[in-house]
Amino acid sequence: MHFANIDGSIIQSHWAGLNFPQVFIFICVAAFTCTEIGCGGKARVPPGPQLSIGPASLADAYTGFPYTETIQVLGGMAPFTWTIDSGALPSGITLGPSTSNRAVVSGTPDVAQSGTSFSVRVMDATGHPASSSYTLNVVQTQNAQLQIVSRQVASNIVEFQGTGAGQFNPRYWQSNTLNWVPDVRLPFLLAQTTGPYRNIYAPWVLEQPSDWRIFYGGWDGSNTPNDRVYSVNTTDFVTLTNRLLVIDHGDFEHVNNESVQRLADGSLHMIATSFPDIAGLNKPAYFSSPDGSVWNGSPEPYQAKLTDIISIPNYALFSGAEINGASVLFYDNDLFTLFFQNNNDQSLLGTMYRATSSQPPVFTNQGLALATASTVQDVRKLQVDGKNWYVMGLASTPQVSFSLSNDGVNFRQEQVAFGPAYLPSDTVFVTMCFVTRGNTLLGVLYGGTDRPFGPGSIYARWLQKKIVIEDSFGNQIIATGSLGPDRQQFTLSSRSVHGTMWIYAENGLTPLAAGQFNIVAGNAYQLVLN
Image (cartoon, rainbow, N blue to C red):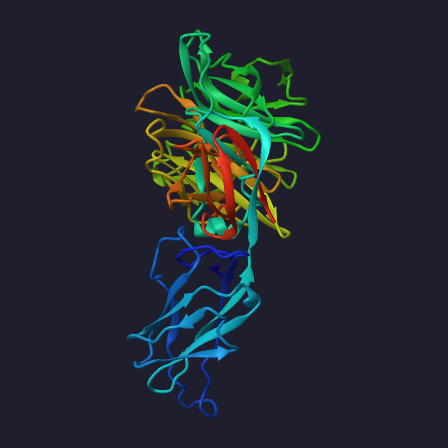
């Protein structure tokens, strides 16, 4: 069983043993207001103690089911009297004696108690009740099963399929305990060997009706060290096809750091960094295509021109602006928005602007979007229960971060997604983009390298359910990594393993299911929760 907050996040807990079907407990807070003595103008009753959860007595969340949690009193006057405010404790759960200002709820609920709820309240020595109480409900979880599928993997590997993230959950992102799993391919995409210049580092993933088109910039095995924009298609992020050059550098030395939007009519619209303009600076250039093959009126690869550079007439600093890899195009509500940062804006260094347009390449500056020293890389819109959520991706070596918004205009303080130390093979980050499927955010592609100033490649991290498996001897087997957004792999030290598995949501905390398993190395299995 497990205890959890009403929003699904876990209060630190302890698992030890198995008992199917599984149950866990939700906790919600009921607020109580202080009342006055008599009429207006008379003294108010002093506030009573405040209840607080945690920290938990035990922090290991993956070794069994019995739960131990500490409830703490803040304020009030000792000693404290702990009571069950409503109902009775579920069978198997106890409320321990108070020591100082703490008491412990512990035990393993009887599965027959599913649906039982109880509230913990406290009163201090002066007779003042707590101004909040905690209601706990016993709720049944799911069983996890594995079904073998016809896919062979390496002889020492076992693969679980069906491990991808669920629909975007803003609570998981706000609490920022997301379970990012590195792709086992290091790198995910390596530059071609067709020429001596091999350095790719600026991915952008465009969701299309039947697949994804991954755009990327750099030197993809070219004969000259000029940045260009390329693309490759995929239906599963495992098999990549149709690798080709999309935008050649043309009048510029470099064209890179692209972002692409697809409209309902199938047309594509791209902003990419071009260098140099007439002042020797980096500027955004705009390219459009009615069908994804013809760009600015010419079949791909299109030869970029100086006239493709955008304009922002009401931004006085534009002619002297250095906008290098910090410009993202976003389309929403029939309007294009350009998020950009000017490295030469010394008075407002570290500030991101927002400009809009109904007909690029001419934009109108709308002012500040977010004060940050990180570089804007991506903006995606997802809808949950009829509410819009905008997720902005930012990069700042050595970390990837994000910021959330509900209107696409006002973004909150950024949070670190992952970093600063990732893997030995991708320690230096340059650029990033999100991968989405409808209203699900699947993961991140990013440009990186294994050493400073070394050639770049494209890496992947996937947002996935957290799977913990334990063999019959009590040894835990941790995921080796992922193969695309929906497959998770484990390395086995023996041919076959029997044991127990625990499945958590992509926040790495919310329990979804548990079950017994028998797995054989070299096989792939579909994860089924029911």
